[in-house]
Image (cartoon, rainbow, N blue to C red; front, side, top):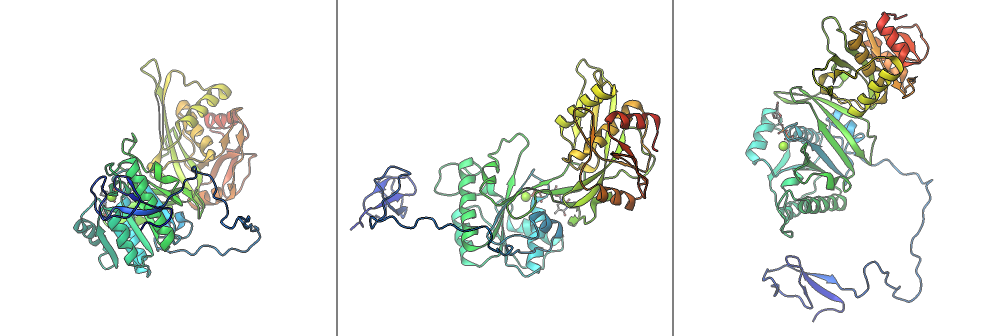
Length: 456
Ligand code: TYD
Ligand code: MG
């Protein structure tokens, strides 16, 4: 006898039955009927309280209650832990997104192995590679001794059941695009499948307090149903980036419910996997030889750390009617703005010239403080006047042509001094010190200094 109000829905075809059956009479599937409580109310309407009385409903709380910081699983990969906000929070879901081949599987195997060595119970589930491949890679990186449990599986149901059997602290799913749920007709990698798989795993993470890291491939043209749909479901979105041809890889938090989003982790890909770069400040400098016209060293801040990086510009006569603007590592809209300000406020014309701007080392800079460094590199190339070898640059530029002060000037100058720089082209008045600041309040001042070689 069916219980009052209970209906049985076939999870394969959606047919509704009044009583439970081993087989769905509509589609013939076995063991697919699941009990649901039927409701004759329109969707969204509230049921009246059973007793007829109005119950308490919500209980409100105040803000001023002391909440302990969330516990963290410290994996021991310091660059990774820092980007997560000091380790991975149990019960949280993280999406690691990146281009195919950038090194996501490599990074996560190292994270897993390190966490396992630190005592966490860890599983690595690959839907892309066979166990032998995963194992061989781990052994090649010298991680063969770590107690990471491996599985090769793509069936969501089996993965969820498997994860319920053991008490895992950290689980990696590589990748979310390969998973498929037998309850959907869409193929693996489709939006419906990716969303269903991610939803199920996020629920499991919360319920069993497992930290789940999902790998998601992104393609430049966005052809494959991307991890975009997953982004709002997870607690943190980390992106793993790197320019082709450079060994450096940058881990960035694009969203993080448990930490800051401006931290970066820097790695170097080598034969033995990824090496953490703990002090990246000198990494992105093109050292050796004279600094040529068109190069400017930007004293930047990435997250909590200062990073010095070279901006390289080339301004050349254009062979075509529409001059080219190409930029790598910086925002093209920002480049257009800086060019317009240089043209309108400083009299430097770029209308009939091609402009190329490149951030050395494959780093992508988003700080507004980089405006002046880009402008200095462009002006230096346009005027064919190199900046001094020992000079760093930073400052924001406004449309009016003002050079605006930026935060953390002291850290920038200190890092520059540490790396042997003695001058800075920076906002505000000129100040002498370990690093002598040649001040500029207008972009035109800065351009004049570059043109005249005046660094007092
Ligand atoms: P992988 O982690 O498989 O990338 P993803 O999972 O993001 O698709 O890494 C692929 C690249 O990394 C591959 O081109 C080879 C390179 N690699 C190294 O250079 N050294 C190494 O030790 C490893 C494991 C990979
Ligand atoms: Mg991979």
